[in-house]
Length: 217
Ligand code: FOL
Image 1: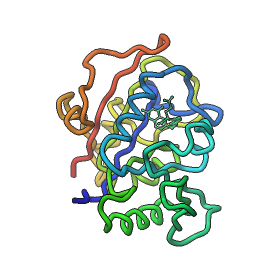
Image 2 (image 1 turned 120 degrees about the vertical axis):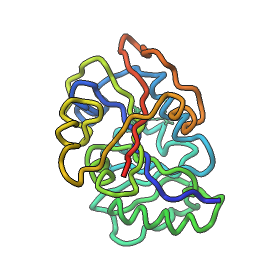
Image 3 (image 1 turned 90 degrees about the vertical axis):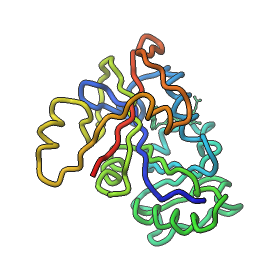
Image 4 (image 1 turned 120 degrees about the horizontal axis):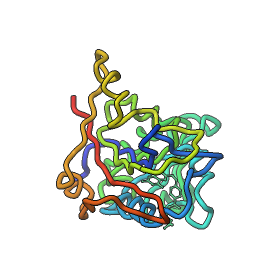
């Protein structure tokens, strides 16, 4: 049956300052095994959806767009307000356009009444900063699959939540701030449905580590 609509944010960010982007794209090139992890995890299971902002959509190479095997939902304030329409040819033909994260989620809630259709599986929020911030403001945001990039890159866009950094302790001490905890490698593996490597990964000379964080409240 259809799982509850909970949001999982997927992000790769620098360990030092949670940098996620530069000049309209990713700050790094050639993290091929990391990108393969992103693709596998967001595809696994049936009928998953990926929600992204318009700038992130524009940043994906056209040959990979829409992201295959997933219902792509793109958000822009310039899109027609109200409940999104399925594109001609059905919801897997290309992508669905929504004017806000809220209307995107309303659209998915409607679709999920019919099990076995695209959009009835897991829902991933894949950026960028504005869409992550909107998602983190909702109680539906339960989990962050964070790839922590150990090397430093110059960034102009940042993930709007400090996970596992000293500044987070201060944020968490504030009243009402949601608390985020890092899950074990075994819990992470069980949720994504594949083994999670224990050691630091290296692609193209860049070191990184796969983590899963969950909101506890
Ligand atoms: N999360 C993580 N962990 N890594 C990322 O690189 C990442 N990138 C975005 C959002 N969350 C992320 C946004 N940027 C593609 C390109 C850029 C992008 C997201 C996806 C993309 O082309 N994906 C293809 C794989 C292409 C390939 O195999 O090289 C896909 O099918 O998912």
